[in-house]
Length: 188
Image (cartoon, rainbow, N blue to C red):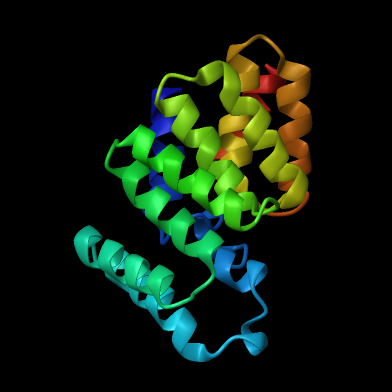
């Protein structure tokens, strides 16, 4: 179970932000903003931050995300990416704040809701995390990291039927080994 939680965290913060693991779902900026309606330079900071993060340079990624935010890029995306950086470094209160700023910019931004769920869970607010993960999945069922953590929470809390429903709904959209593993645990 600890290995699954670490995998969830790494999948969220270590793979370029809040997109689903494995590249099966579109990146958040592709789903939240119509790229044709914004100049390409606005997204350059986010893309540069994602590239820096992929290289392992968290400081440079943060600098690019802040630059994107200050240059008028999609605030929900930029704040969420900053939250992912904080989350990955264990700064859970700062991550929570960044995700809440993302929701102020876009109340329906599923990756920010997912991030709040992770920040709460990892920061000690386990009882509150599930509601945010469920909201994120209701908006974007392809967020397999949210499904994996929510399934883990439901199984640990003795609700295998609820965990099974979360896993099956997620797997109908995108395959994720951790979600499939949770499904197996629920069935046991």
